[in-house]
Image (cartoon, rainbow, N blue to C red; front, top):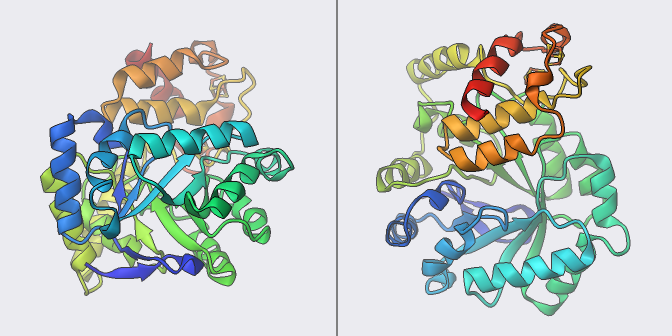
Length: 335
Ligand code: SF4
Ligand code: SF4
Protein backbone atom coordinates (compact mmCIF):
# COMPACT_ATOMS: atom_id res chain seq x y z
CA UNK A 1 0.00 0.00 0.00
CA UNK A 2 1.22 3.49 -0.82
CA UNK A 3 0.82 6.17 1.84
CA UNK A 4 0.45 9.91 1.35
CA UNK A 5 0.59 12.81 3.73
CA UNK A 6 -2.79 14.21 4.73
CA UNK A 7 -1.75 17.81 4.27
CA UNK A 8 -0.57 19.65 7.34
CA UNK A 9 -2.21 17.18 9.74
CA UNK A 10 1.08 15.27 9.53
CA UNK A 11 -0.88 12.00 9.26
CA UNK A 12 0.12 9.45 6.64
CA UNK A 13 -2.93 7.90 5.05
CA UNK A 14 -3.27 4.96 2.70
CA UNK A 15 -3.81 6.02 -0.93
CA UNK A 16 -6.98 3.93 -0.80
CA UNK A 17 -9.18 4.65 2.20
CA UNK A 18 -12.37 2.95 3.36
CA UNK A 19 -15.62 4.79 2.59
CA UNK A 20 -18.18 4.00 5.26
CA UNK A 21 -21.52 4.29 3.43
CA UNK A 22 -22.08 0.73 2.10
CA UNK A 23 -21.12 -0.96 5.37
CA UNK A 24 -24.59 0.06 6.57
CA UNK A 25 -25.97 -2.75 4.40
CA UNK A 26 -23.99 -5.64 5.91
CA UNK A 27 -24.39 -7.42 9.25
CA UNK A 28 -21.97 -6.96 12.14
CA UNK A 29 -19.97 -10.13 11.43
CA UNK A 30 -19.39 -9.13 7.82
CA UNK A 31 -18.46 -5.61 8.90
CA UNK A 32 -15.86 -7.03 11.29
CA UNK A 33 -14.37 -9.17 8.51
CA UNK A 34 -14.24 -6.27 6.06
CA UNK A 35 -12.58 -3.84 8.43
CA UNK A 36 -10.03 -6.39 9.63
CA UNK A 37 -9.20 -7.36 6.05
CA UNK A 38 -8.82 -3.72 5.06
CA UNK A 39 -6.42 -3.07 7.95
CA UNK A 40 -4.47 -6.23 7.16
CA UNK A 41 -4.05 -5.04 3.57
CA UNK A 42 -2.66 -1.70 4.73
CA UNK A 43 -5.78 0.47 4.45
CA UNK A 44 -5.50 2.78 7.43
CA UNK A 45 -7.97 5.59 6.64
CA UNK A 46 -11.62 5.02 7.53
CA UNK A 47 -14.26 7.64 6.78
CA UNK A 48 -17.76 7.53 8.19
CA UNK A 49 -20.45 9.98 9.32
CA UNK A 50 -23.05 10.57 11.99
CA UNK A 51 -25.62 10.45 9.21
CA UNK A 52 -24.67 6.96 7.97
CA UNK A 53 -26.95 5.20 10.48
CA UNK A 54 -24.88 2.40 12.11
CA UNK A 55 -21.69 2.89 10.06
CA UNK A 56 -19.73 4.44 12.95
CA UNK A 57 -20.81 1.65 15.29
CA UNK A 58 -19.88 -1.08 12.78
CA UNK A 59 -16.45 0.39 12.06
CA UNK A 60 -15.96 0.82 15.78
CA UNK A 61 -16.38 -2.92 16.39
CA UNK A 62 -12.87 -3.37 15.03
CA UNK A 63 -11.29 0.07 15.13
CA UNK A 64 -11.66 0.47 18.89
CA UNK A 65 -9.42 -2.60 19.24
CA UNK A 66 -6.97 -1.63 16.50
CA UNK A 67 -6.97 2.15 16.74
CA UNK A 68 -3.16 2.33 16.72
CA UNK A 69 -3.24 1.08 13.13
CA UNK A 70 -6.08 3.31 11.97
CA UNK A 71 -6.92 6.92 11.23
CA UNK A 72 -10.60 7.50 11.90
CA UNK A 73 -12.52 10.27 10.20
CA UNK A 74 -16.17 11.06 10.75
CA UNK A 75 -18.44 14.03 10.17
CA UNK A 76 -21.66 15.70 11.20
CA UNK A 77 -24.31 17.90 9.59
CA UNK A 78 -24.60 19.86 12.85
CA UNK A 79 -24.43 23.59 12.26
CA UNK A 80 -24.57 25.01 15.80
CA UNK A 81 -22.13 24.66 18.68
CA UNK A 82 -24.57 22.70 20.85
CA UNK A 83 -25.57 20.28 18.10
CA UNK A 84 -21.97 19.67 17.10
CA UNK A 85 -20.87 19.10 20.70
CA UNK A 86 -23.66 16.50 21.04
CA UNK A 87 -22.69 14.82 17.79
CA UNK A 88 -19.01 14.56 18.70
CA UNK A 89 -20.06 12.83 21.91
CA UNK A 90 -22.36 10.46 20.00
CA UNK A 91 -19.61 9.64 17.48
CA UNK A 92 -17.19 8.80 20.29
CA UNK A 93 -19.77 6.54 21.89
CA UNK A 94 -20.71 4.82 18.62
CA UNK A 95 -17.10 4.24 17.64
CA UNK A 96 -16.16 3.28 21.19
CA UNK A 97 -12.91 5.24 20.99
CA UNK A 98 -11.40 7.90 23.22
CA UNK A 99 -10.55 10.18 20.35
CA UNK A 100 -11.27 10.72 16.66
CA UNK A 101 -8.46 11.69 14.30
CA UNK A 102 -10.47 13.89 11.95
CA UNK A 103 -13.89 15.43 12.50
CA UNK A 104 -15.44 17.11 9.48
CA UNK A 105 -18.24 19.59 9.00
CA UNK A 106 -20.40 17.51 6.67
CA UNK A 107 -21.82 18.66 3.35
CA UNK A 108 -21.57 22.43 3.57
CA UNK A 109 -24.01 23.13 0.78
CA UNK A 110 -23.98 26.94 0.57
CA UNK A 111 -21.73 29.90 1.47
CA UNK A 112 -24.34 30.96 4.06
CA UNK A 113 -23.92 27.57 5.78
CA UNK A 114 -20.16 28.06 5.88
CA UNK A 115 -20.72 31.44 7.51
CA UNK A 116 -23.13 29.91 10.01
CA UNK A 117 -20.76 27.17 11.15
CA UNK A 118 -17.90 29.67 11.48
CA UNK A 119 -19.85 32.38 13.31
CA UNK A 120 -19.73 32.56 17.13
CA UNK A 121 -22.00 29.80 18.43
CA UNK A 122 -21.49 27.82 15.23
CA UNK A 123 -20.38 24.18 14.86
CA UNK A 124 -16.71 25.13 14.49
CA UNK A 125 -16.67 26.43 18.09
CA UNK A 126 -17.51 22.93 19.34
CA UNK A 127 -14.88 21.38 17.08
CA UNK A 128 -12.23 23.78 18.38
CA UNK A 129 -13.25 22.97 21.98
CA UNK A 130 -13.01 19.24 21.23
CA UNK A 131 -9.63 19.71 19.60
CA UNK A 132 -8.38 21.60 22.62
CA UNK A 133 -9.49 18.83 24.95
CA UNK A 134 -7.92 16.20 22.69
CA UNK A 135 -11.02 14.19 21.78
CA UNK A 136 -10.61 15.18 18.17
CA UNK A 137 -7.23 15.75 16.59
CA UNK A 138 -8.00 17.60 13.36
CA UNK A 139 -10.86 19.51 11.71
CA UNK A 140 -12.01 19.13 8.11
CA UNK A 141 -14.82 20.14 5.80
CA UNK A 142 -16.77 18.29 3.11
CA UNK A 143 -18.76 19.80 0.29
CA UNK A 144 -19.95 19.22 -3.27
CA UNK A 145 -19.53 22.94 -4.04
CA UNK A 146 -15.96 23.44 -5.20
CA UNK A 147 -16.04 27.25 -5.10
CA UNK A 148 -16.79 27.09 -1.40
CA UNK A 149 -13.41 25.62 -0.47
CA UNK A 150 -11.69 28.88 -1.35
CA UNK A 151 -13.36 30.78 1.51
CA UNK A 152 -13.23 27.75 3.80
CA UNK A 153 -9.48 27.31 3.45
CA UNK A 154 -8.81 31.02 3.90
CA UNK A 155 -10.11 30.76 7.47
CA UNK A 156 -7.22 28.47 8.46
CA UNK A 157 -9.63 26.30 10.50
CA UNK A 158 -9.85 23.35 8.15
CA UNK A 159 -6.91 21.03 7.68
CA UNK A 160 -8.61 18.79 5.13
CA UNK A 161 -11.19 19.09 2.39
CA UNK A 162 -13.36 16.27 1.12
CA UNK A 163 -14.99 16.50 -2.29
CA UNK A 164 -16.34 14.32 -5.09
CA UNK A 165 -13.98 13.54 -7.96
CA UNK A 166 -14.09 10.75 -10.53
CA UNK A 167 -13.59 10.43 -14.28
CA UNK A 168 -17.22 11.56 -14.78
CA UNK A 169 -16.91 14.55 -12.47
CA UNK A 170 -13.52 16.14 -13.01
CA UNK A 171 -14.36 19.75 -13.92
CA UNK A 172 -12.37 22.27 -11.90
CA UNK A 173 -10.38 19.64 -10.01
CA UNK A 174 -6.83 20.88 -10.84
CA UNK A 175 -7.72 24.35 -9.49
CA UNK A 176 -9.02 22.89 -6.24
CA UNK A 177 -5.95 20.71 -5.83
CA UNK A 178 -3.70 23.74 -6.36
CA UNK A 179 -5.70 25.67 -3.78
CA UNK A 180 -5.47 22.83 -1.26
CA UNK A 181 -1.72 22.56 -1.82
CA UNK A 182 -1.30 26.31 -1.31
CA UNK A 183 -3.02 26.00 2.10
CA UNK A 184 -1.37 22.71 3.03
CA UNK A 185 -4.76 21.01 3.22
CA UNK A 186 -5.18 17.27 2.88
CA UNK A 187 -7.50 16.17 0.07
CA UNK A 188 -9.95 13.30 0.57
CA UNK A 189 -11.78 12.14 -2.53
CA UNK A 190 -15.32 10.87 -2.11
CA UNK A 191 -17.58 9.34 -4.79
CA UNK A 192 -14.60 8.02 -6.79
CA UNK A 193 -16.89 5.66 -8.68
CA UNK A 194 -19.60 8.28 -9.19
CA UNK A 195 -21.88 6.59 -6.68
CA UNK A 196 -21.43 3.17 -8.28
CA UNK A 197 -22.02 4.38 -11.85
CA UNK A 198 -18.47 3.53 -12.94
CA UNK A 199 -17.94 -0.21 -13.28
CA UNK A 200 -14.21 -0.22 -14.10
CA UNK A 201 -13.48 0.55 -10.46
CA UNK A 202 -9.76 -0.20 -10.44
CA UNK A 203 -9.15 1.99 -13.47
CA UNK A 204 -11.15 4.88 -12.04
CA UNK A 205 -9.30 4.71 -8.71
CA UNK A 206 -5.94 4.66 -10.47
CA UNK A 207 -7.04 7.60 -12.66
CA UNK A 208 -7.73 9.65 -9.51
CA UNK A 209 -4.51 8.61 -7.79
CA UNK A 210 -2.54 10.08 -10.67
CA UNK A 211 -3.59 13.48 -9.28
CA UNK A 212 -2.04 14.93 -6.10
CA UNK A 213 -4.82 13.81 -3.75
CA UNK A 214 -4.19 12.40 -0.27
CA UNK A 215 -6.60 9.48 -0.24
CA UNK A 216 -9.52 8.10 -2.23
CA UNK A 217 -12.35 6.49 -0.28
CA UNK A 218 -14.48 4.05 -2.27
CA UNK A 219 -17.28 2.43 -0.28
CA UNK A 220 -16.83 -1.29 0.30
CA UNK A 221 -19.25 -3.99 1.36
CA UNK A 222 -17.54 -7.21 0.26
CA UNK A 223 -14.16 -8.82 0.80
CA UNK A 224 -13.63 -8.89 -2.95
CA UNK A 225 -14.07 -5.12 -3.15
CA UNK A 226 -11.71 -4.57 -0.24
CA UNK A 227 -9.05 -6.70 -1.92
CA UNK A 228 -9.48 -5.20 -5.39
CA UNK A 229 -9.45 -1.64 -4.08
CA UNK A 230 -6.44 -2.27 -1.85
CA UNK A 231 -4.50 -3.67 -4.80
CA UNK A 232 -4.89 -0.34 -6.62
CA UNK A 233 -3.33 1.33 -3.61
CA UNK A 234 -0.24 -0.81 -4.15
CA UNK A 235 0.03 -0.22 -7.89
CA UNK A 236 3.03 1.87 -8.90
CA UNK A 237 2.52 2.34 -12.67
CA UNK A 238 0.12 4.77 -14.32
CA UNK A 239 -2.78 3.68 -16.53
CA UNK A 240 -1.66 2.19 -19.83
CA UNK A 241 -3.06 3.72 -23.06
CA UNK A 242 -5.31 0.65 -23.47
CA UNK A 243 -6.68 1.04 -19.91
CA UNK A 244 -7.26 4.74 -20.49
CA UNK A 245 -9.23 3.97 -23.68
CA UNK A 246 -11.34 1.43 -21.83
CA UNK A 247 -12.15 3.97 -19.11
CA UNK A 248 -12.82 6.73 -21.66
CA UNK A 249 -15.32 4.48 -23.46
CA UNK A 250 -17.18 3.79 -20.25
CA UNK A 251 -17.23 7.46 -19.33
CA UNK A 252 -18.69 8.37 -22.69
CA UNK A 253 -21.48 5.82 -22.29
CA UNK A 254 -22.29 6.61 -18.65
CA UNK A 255 -21.91 10.33 -19.11
CA UNK A 256 -25.01 10.49 -21.29
CA UNK A 257 -27.34 10.01 -18.29
CA UNK A 258 -25.21 10.83 -15.25
CA UNK A 259 -26.11 13.93 -13.22
CA UNK A 260 -22.96 15.70 -11.98
CA UNK A 261 -24.94 17.81 -9.48
CA UNK A 262 -23.52 21.00 -10.95
CA UNK A 263 -26.86 22.77 -10.38
CA UNK A 264 -26.88 24.66 -13.68
CA UNK A 265 -30.39 23.37 -14.41
CA UNK A 266 -31.68 25.21 -11.33
CA UNK A 267 -33.89 26.98 -10.55
CA UNK A 268 -36.74 24.97 -11.99
CA UNK A 269 -39.78 27.26 -12.39
CA UNK A 270 -41.82 24.71 -10.41
CA UNK A 271 -39.21 24.58 -7.63
CA UNK A 272 -38.16 20.96 -8.19
CA UNK A 273 -34.70 20.15 -6.80
CA UNK A 274 -33.61 18.24 -9.90
CA UNK A 275 -30.10 17.20 -8.77
CA UNK A 276 -31.54 15.90 -5.50
CA UNK A 277 -33.96 13.63 -7.39
CA UNK A 278 -31.08 12.13 -9.34
CA UNK A 279 -28.95 11.80 -6.22
CA UNK A 280 -31.72 9.87 -4.47
CA UNK A 281 -32.29 7.77 -7.57
CA UNK A 282 -28.58 6.91 -7.52
CA UNK A 283 -28.83 5.82 -3.89
CA UNK A 284 -31.83 3.69 -4.85
CA UNK A 285 -30.37 2.03 -7.94
CA UNK A 286 -26.66 1.85 -7.17
CA UNK A 287 -26.36 1.68 -3.37
CA UNK A 288 -29.55 -0.32 -2.79
CA UNK A 289 -30.66 2.17 -0.10
CA UNK A 290 -34.22 1.91 -1.38
CA UNK A 291 -36.23 2.71 1.75
CA UNK A 292 -33.95 5.61 2.72
CA UNK A 293 -34.09 7.08 -0.80
CA UNK A 294 -37.88 6.82 -0.91
CA UNK A 295 -38.23 8.48 2.46
CA UNK A 296 -35.99 11.39 1.46
CA UNK A 297 -37.90 11.65 -1.82
CA UNK A 298 -41.23 11.89 0.01
CA UNK A 299 -39.72 14.65 2.17
CA UNK A 300 -38.82 16.85 -0.80
CA UNK A 301 -40.33 20.34 -0.62
CA UNK A 302 -41.72 20.08 -4.16
CA UNK A 303 -42.59 16.66 -5.52
CA UNK A 304 -41.27 16.01 -9.04
CA UNK A 305 -44.80 15.27 -10.28
CA UNK A 306 -45.12 19.08 -10.42
CA UNK A 307 -42.98 18.99 -13.59
CA UNK A 308 -44.75 20.68 -16.52
CA UNK A 309 -42.17 19.38 -19.04
CA UNK A 310 -41.22 22.92 -19.98
CA UNK A 311 -37.67 21.64 -20.65
CA UNK A 312 -36.01 24.83 -19.38
CA UNK A 313 -33.73 22.56 -17.35
CA UNK A 314 -32.62 20.61 -20.40
CA UNK A 315 -31.64 23.81 -22.20
CA UNK A 316 -29.41 24.74 -19.26
CA UNK A 317 -27.75 21.37 -18.56
CA UNK A 318 -24.16 21.56 -19.87
CA UNK A 319 -24.09 17.77 -20.23
CA UNK A 320 -27.23 17.66 -22.41
CA UNK A 321 -28.91 15.16 -20.12
CA UNK A 322 -32.42 14.05 -21.09
CA UNK A 323 -33.68 15.39 -17.75
CA UNK A 324 -37.38 14.94 -18.43
CA UNK A 325 -37.01 11.29 -19.35
CA UNK A 326 -34.66 10.71 -16.41
CA UNK A 327 -37.20 12.29 -14.05
CA UNK A 328 -39.93 10.01 -15.34
CA UNK A 329 -37.74 6.96 -14.71
CA UNK A 330 -36.66 8.16 -11.25
CA UNK A 331 -40.29 8.84 -10.27
CA UNK A 332 -41.30 5.32 -11.30
CA UNK A 333 -38.78 3.97 -8.79
CA UNK A 334 -39.12 6.46 -5.96
CA UNK A 335 -42.87 7.20 -5.78
S1 SF4 B 1 -39.01 20.40 -17.38
FE1 SF4 B 1 -39.84 20.02 -15.34
S2 SF4 B 1 -38.05 19.82 -14.05
FE2 SF4 B 1 -37.37 20.81 -15.93
S3 SF4 B 1 -37.48 23.00 -15.49
FE3 SF4 B 1 -39.42 22.41 -16.45
S4 SF4 B 1 -40.77 21.94 -14.73
FE4 SF4 B 1 -38.69 21.97 -13.93
S1 SF4 C 1 -27.45 20.70 -15.01
FE1 SF4 C 1 -27.49 18.54 -15.60
S2 SF4 C 1 -25.71 17.62 -14.59
FE2 SF4 C 1 -26.02 19.62 -13.65
S3 SF4 C 1 -27.32 19.20 -11.87
FE3 SF4 C 1 -28.72 19.65 -13.52
S4 SF4 C 1 -29.21 17.69 -14.45
FE4 SF4 C 1 -27.42 17.39 -13.19
